[in-house]
Image (cartoon, rainbow, N blue to C red):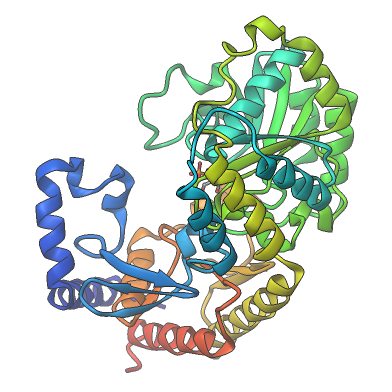
Length: 450
Ligand SMILES: Cc1ncc(COP(=O)(O)O)c(C=O)c1O
């Protein structure tokens, strides 16, 4: 339906508009190149839509303002790190009061106890540990799973993302495990460390776990990083049953699926992981992550680590669970990520989903949209994918770039590298209507109906 020449011509126009509108971001980017590798603090930022990244002046609630004076509706929200809305009042107050009283001591704090109590109440797992990032929470969980099971391998789902964990950068190619395209510096070929199967494939799961060499399955309860892919009915039951039967530890990563509700998808759907990992929004934007253990696993871990060797195990890190992060976690869990907040966010996401669907229907586009809690995502394919392989095969980098840049030039930031939108407690139905209008205009331009 969309001519590629038209797409490329529109993309070119949008690139020019972006450059013309952002002289101050452009100047800062030029300056960045002197001492930041690639002109960016993290190299993946070279991939933002536009000739350079936007420099933010400040952010509040569902919005941010750039150095060129433009206001943006933020549907990216730091890819979930700011799902609380930017600068949530209670988290800011807790951090402000703690920071002047010291931020890191390598000693425990009352706030760490309170945060663990709040996490237990939410997710049902009795024991918790802290990390600085969700990546680390996953990495440490994998190490502990290997340690207690004495098994070498882990299992992940094709096109998953769990942070920069080496073992997880593996995909399936003609049934074989290969390094994921673009992975940098793989320590070993991931087929030595990792089994990869497609999401929703119970037979493949059974076959992979049956030899008894897999320490843990690491999974998001719903895939979110190659788009939202829900589990088929019965898939989670099979996953739990097969992991139990084979003595495999089940790690559920709730870092993104916390968009489902206060206790994430796990609590909402009564799942029973051995370990649950979470990071990003739990401290209102301050780096903090946590991982919780079932009673049985906690006992196995506790009894398997000698006290005099407990500082050499590669678990933890100097800044993990620092008193500033603990204060931010306590305040965010208690006062920001509340049932009332989800009561605001989820209906707004439903409105986003139905509005995008209405545009898809109006123009009979071969596109689909899906929702998970306060998160929504559309794809350039006619039906919802069942697994990561299917989802990845329908990606369209140029169309993606165009949709992002078109939105950005009209004051909307979407989650980069896929067409994901997240609602904060401050995102309104009116904000969604702005997105719908901009999305519809993009479609009309692509179809040459403008
Ligand atoms: C499901 C999931 N887990 C873990 C992570 C890693 O988070 P971080 O980059 O904060 O370590 C991500 C990041 O996108 C994620 O999507």
